[in-house]
Length: 110
Image 1 (cartoon, rainbow, N blue to C red):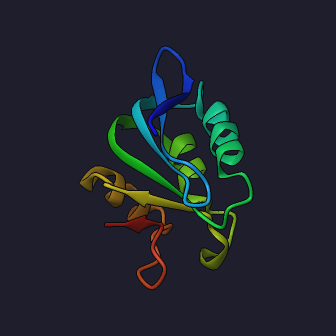
Image 2 (image 1 turned 90 degrees about the horizontal axis):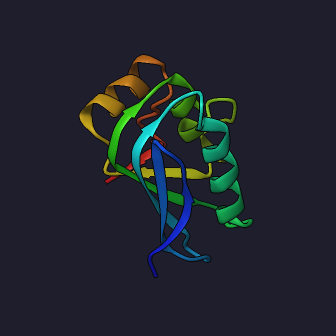
């Protein structure tokens, strides 16, 4: 069930799976210009499900505003509803440096 959820000049969000196990793929770049739209799209597609899987393998750039959307740092780890998949080494390192990667309850999944 692949369909376009959002697209701008830098970012494309494609639905990989529908609720009750929603999943999306991000392709392109996330920065301050489109991170609010990313946050809205993810929250809408989550549609009340406990988790949303986000595949970040095709992201070529993500700035701090994008990492904040994906890591949900304002929430305790147990309440973070985004699960990252296919996190690149650079993305993982950024999460670790910011202290937003909790080894006991990671935001990233294999």
